Amino acid sequence: GGSEAVIYRVNPPDAESGVRVGDDEYRGFPASGAGIDNGDPALRIAFFALLWNQPVDTPIHLYARDSLGNEGSGALEYRVFEKEFRKSQIHLDDRFLARVVPPILQNSPELKVDDPTDMLASYLTINRELRRLNDATIADLAKQTAPKILWHGPFKQLINTAVEAGFADQRTYVYNGKDVDHQVHLGFDLASVAAAPVHAANSGRVVHAGWLGIYGNCVIIDHGMGLQSLYAHLSSISVKVGDMVEANGLLGHTGSTGLAGGDHLHFTMLLGGHAVTPIDWWSPQWVQARVLRKITEAGGTPP
Image (cartoon, rainbow, N blue to C red; front, side, top):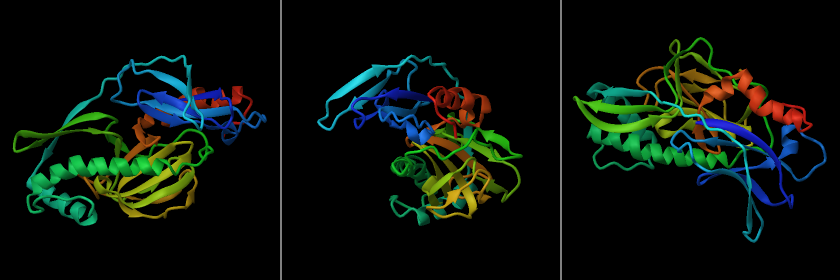
């Protein structure tokens, strides 16, 4: 679930290029969008990730493609560190199902269930199929990313919150003592008081503000060059699509919409439409060493 950045040159300068991690491609952008204005049109920067479910030996390399589909590749030096993910259980009961299933079905006409009155079967369809549809929507929103860095410095965790669930927790869902489903929690659940104000983790442009299936009321901010942040289960939304927001700008308030067991914020970082751990982006040391240092050494002025 970790992220990285690489600065490289590609020739010809108009070739499509980036980083391929297994079967996933992360597009490279002109380095001028990262504050590197040295007049070199061949210089590019790409942010990429090794996802939580990709093996540690997944191949990672640079690629470049011309308009005829001819492709070249370049090697990267890198090290991968294994990560153990926590296992947890989510206990379902009829009261919870009766609270969350009807509003999700009402607000998600794209999802078809056999019998809306069968709460458990509908919940499992939501947890599996609607989750998949929501992932596809998030992937489409990633295409709207700006070709320049919109953020400044490390991202900020919602203040005064307790972590109730972490990134890539392996969740087993239990109903009446039986395991009924298994999903992976791709974000952090952050809780404080009910209806707590939710602030932008960094500056950027709002690309989604509204209902998003399992996430309920949700805001997604584009920070440029494929990097986005997601804020879910909100009780209210204070921004609209197209708004430019600054770090700490008010986005809305925490809630329990979507598949939330209680009032909290589900927060995650997205890279190329894929969930990555926010821990990297929250760390001033990581942001400096893995991103800003590289921009400076390439002759740029970090954002």
